[in-house]
Image (cartoon, rainbow, N blue to C red; front, side, top):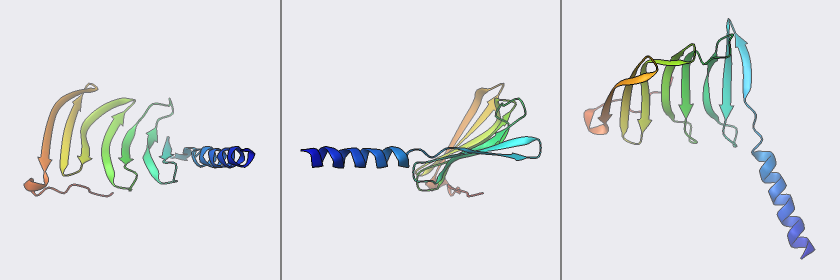
Length: 119
């Protein structure tokens, strides 16, 4: 019984340590680039903050396989302009105005659209 408990404790500790992937922050010009990771070390999300700490500029999100699933712009913490969301065989273009959705257009593979553009 003690061996089983010890084994469970070791596995639990190793799992907890593997989940401790901290984000990185680096200064780039007047902005701070933030990069957030999955437990396996792959990039989950990356983008920029302005000097007030608000989201600013391009932000990108990736799935666990490294495929881009979202890309858009912030202006001083407010979603702005066109955002793109990739989901299986669909691409959704969401237009934001005043931090609210103004319109949504969705395409599928049948529309001959590039579905996962890697930038």
